[in-house]
Amino acid sequence: MDKTIDMLDQICQTNKKQFDYIMEIGNKISYLSKNEELEQLEILINQNSDVLPLLRGHIQEAFESILHLRFDEVIEFFLENGYQINQQENNYLIDLCKTSRFFAVDPPKETLNLLIKYGVDLNQMEDIKYRTALHYACKYGIIDFVKILVQNGAEIDPVDFKKRTPYDYAQKKNNQKTLALNKFVIFSKIKDLLINGILILKVKYFRENKLFSINKITYNFSIQ
Image 1 (cartoon, helix red, strand yellow):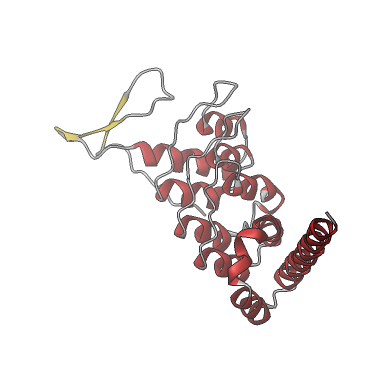
Image 2 (cartoon, rainbow, N blue to C red):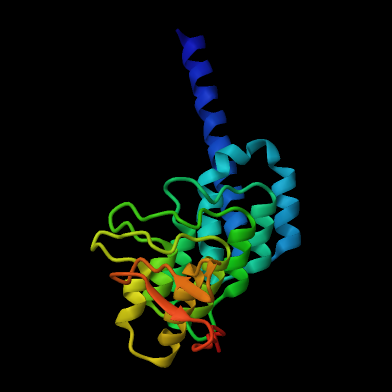
């Protein structure tokens, strides 16, 4: 019995040391990430590659922090080394759009492009509101985000819990930037169909398709 108790005590002590070590490494990962000490971070990760599965929670917390801080080099380091951004519980792309509403004039395009480069799901929906990143980009008038999302294949007409599409939110805005946004969203819906000199616009948001003569209308879809 005494030997068994001693053995259990040793196991407890060993587990405690391992736990303390994991916590220490996890805290270092968070610190180095937030301070953009990329070289030291890489060394630390390489030295502890065998316990990385046990550091998942710390790494996730660190990634969320640097994403909010827009530390692109550190973000790319995590992504290059296999950090998965498409886990079901993660809404990194949506969060980026929501937290960029205060920087709509100069949004973090580099950060957005990084997430897209490493395979983020452009059409991921929130669990309750069923909104996508494009919903929020249109809702907050983030023109550059709309352009990047659409050009990279984001669905234009997903419907949220209010039965609204991203275009519906764009229409609610009443300023020149949003008019440009509306124009870009419509442009992305244009099909390359030419029939007897007529360009057909297929836009779901119109009650019926409208036909415009190419010779009579000049389109300028550039976004300033």
